Structure formats: C-alpha cells, structure tokens
Image (tube, rainbow, N blue to C red; front, side):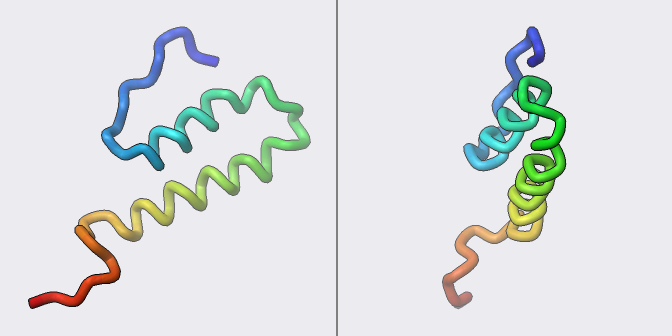
Length: 60
C-alpha cells in the first residue's frame, strides 16, 4: 500500500478501482490476475462512457 493517500479523481467508481489497485500487494499473487482484470474492466467501462452526461437519455 502507498504511504500517500491517492487524490480523488472526482469519480467514485474510478476512486474505488484505484483503491482496489492500491491494496493488490496485500493479496495473494494467485489472485492478482482476476483482480487486475476486474479493475481493468471498471476503468475501461468508465472510459467508454466518458463524456456522456446521461448515457440512457435521448438528445433534443
């Protein structure tokens, strides 16, 4: 774990993913691939929806 707390990104989903990444070293190595894949999925999904104010709403 890092000694300096991470700065908030302003997005709770991203912040939670980064917290999970920060605690990875404390987990058994055999769990790392699955955890990294899960974190990557969260970050990839957030990136794909970036810039969309409300992904489910219709435009004017």
